[in-house]
Image 1 (cartoon, rainbow, N blue to C red):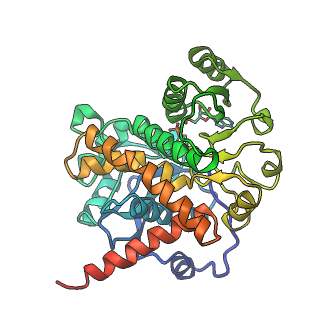
Image 2 (cartoon, rainbow, N blue to C red):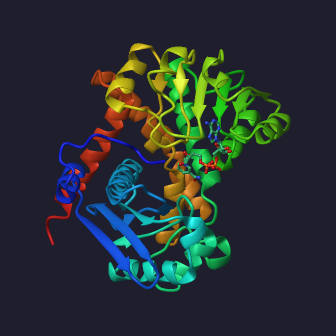
Length: 363
Ligand code: NAD
């Protein structure tokens, strides 16, 4: 859950400077036991949007590191997707099972409200729709609400659609055609997004292999989508054309990379490359086309954005379809620059922020 990284300067401002954040807000309330950190990375393109995660961090430093890393990731995801959003994220420190109360969540909501819309929160790990309802009682700066409350509802189908679009664009680059008919595809993780993705892939006639941490879930999905279920670790050794990580981060690492037989990697998991600078170039060397994770899994954020701007599910899907073209652009750019797709995507996001920042410099 928490990324461990050796920081050169572990002071609070040292860390903030390293990740180049605009603002970090520490929230404390004695009565409810609330201890939270809101990280606002960059608001050049718009308000910083990102979910709130509740986690029993071993230390405050670990919580700070997590919020800084996650909020920075949101900036890039929004920027590359052409959204007018900045990057933010919040963490509440504590055990969600024992510490989460209505009062604590509403107190947190008041801190969000104090930021006057500079930060918009949403659901993340260990937060539920019900929790969002409590936060919403104190602030209107909440997104990703259920449809029954006028929100955009479950983002997973939209994330799956974007991942599917990104996969097709990567397939076109690798195989010369974006058809997935007959392609052997290994899906790792058949949860919310994985299941919707399997549906698209089955409909297109792909030959599916899958795995999940929960064996019954894997077997059920295999039966439903005509797939073969394999063991957790066996997924890396499958003789497939495409590997789709849809569970956890860092699955492309020193141990797994040499086992992969695929020509394309495209999945919805966040932070798939254990080390971008090592494994990004390594995939290029091995002739594997990688669909950058923060680009091809942006459908969920696009869905939430459509809620913020008053759009519909259809608006979100139309915008999400553009992930195909953006992925093609990024893959071509990486090739031209003799770089790797993750680096090219990051640069493209940074270029948009810089360009729009200049537009905004005039009143
Ligand atoms: P989920 O919890 O519904 O599904 C994840 C699945 O992976 C679960 O079925 C779980 O049992 C399985 N899993 C866990 N560890 C595994 C392992 N080692 N090997 C195989 N399977 C394992 O989550 P989700 O909403 O489907 O999201 C999947 C991934 O996509 C996550 O990394 C999430 O951060 C990312 N993501 C999701 C969205 C979204 O809209 N839900 C948006 C962007 C990114």
